[in-house]
Length: 130
Image (cartoon, rainbow, N blue to C red; front, side):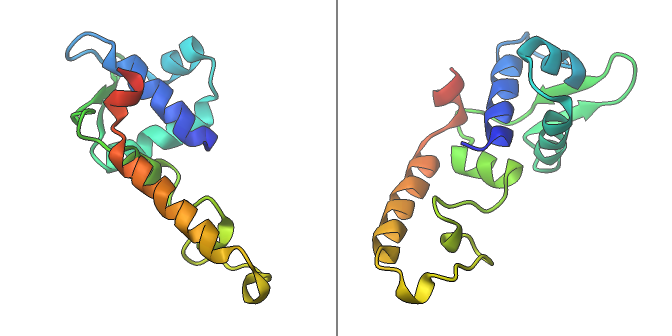
């Protein structure tokens, strides 16, 4: 699992456990969870743009979950935070592999990736953090 996705899940889990309407400062989340601010900050901004969280500016500002985490699929969060992903680089759109013409496992890896992508689509964030 990419670190960006792991940290996003940790942050969402922490915010989900908070009081309704509670705002969470990014730096405080990072300090509490012992995770790097720069990676988390980028993930929070991407989640804000995707309307998973909202941000409030100012001295008492912070982030708040605004999506139903029971309906947010892991596949969507991964796409937002990490971007296109696959279990092998040759399957990521726009990527190529110099072994593609002679690869003997490409179909098997493709089938495995399809199963993996389905697992991500079938798993909600709340299932993971709840």
